[in-house]
Every structure is written in C-alpha cells, then in structure tokens.
Amino acid sequence: MKKTITLRPASMDDANILLEWRNDPETRRSSHNTSEVVWEEHLAWLKKTLSNTNRRLLVAEENGAPVGTVRADLSEGVWELSWTIAPKARRRGGAKRIVALLAQQISEPIRAEVKVGNVASARIAEHAGMVFIREVKGILHYSREALK
Image (cartoon, rainbow, N blue to C red):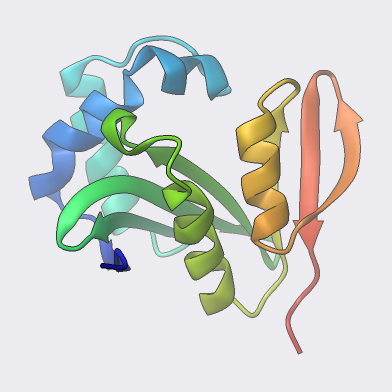
C-alpha cells in the first residue's frame, strides 16, 4: 500500500510534537541554532509563527499520522523552506516528498540553506527543484526560480 503524504496547517495542538522533533539531537545538529529549546520559548515562538502572515508552518501526515514539518518564510518575494522529519520517519524518503509537495504549491521563487555535510537535506532541496548556488561559511545555498 502506497503511503499518502498530506500537509495541513500547524496549530497550538501540535506544540508538544513540534518541540520533541525540534529538540531531537539529529535535528539540532542540522539546524542553524543547535541549542535545545525550552517549552516556554517554544510556545512563544509557535504563537508568533501561527500569527505571522509571511510564514506557513505545515505538519506533514502519512496516512493520518504526523511525520514531519515544513516551514516557508516569505521575504522580498522569495520563500525560504526549512523542514524537520520525525525521528521515527527518517530514511524512508518522506522528507523528499514533504518538501517537494510544498514546493509544488509555491509559484514564487524558493530557497533553502543546508549545512555542509548534511547530504540528506541537500538531496531533499534538489528533489524539490532547487539547485546549488553557492557555499558561504559552511552553509550551502539552494534556489529555484518562480514557476511559470
């Protein structure tokens, strides 16, 4: 049976699972900010995120079960994508499908930043149609032009 991936808007009801995924050691190693996030800080961030009209935070579900999250931040006409896959859902190709699904829904230009050495995320960005542009201070920059 093929697993169906869907994206839905995140809500405050997702706070626990989003924090759990964010504080996972592998997720932290791949993040710009590698510090562990405390509950109060996470709740404040989530409330601010959900009210930000230039940010889309989506929870990916596989056959109804949450398996990851993808975020798109709009700045100067370009959406920057970032993603987290649940530890139990890793290494199954789900992150590629999640990010590609969101990228297909955005007609404006998109971009992503990936730490050097994070081969999986580099492949995810490429699978979503982005191409490597440059490396700056250990960060790989990927981009895709607007869809026609």
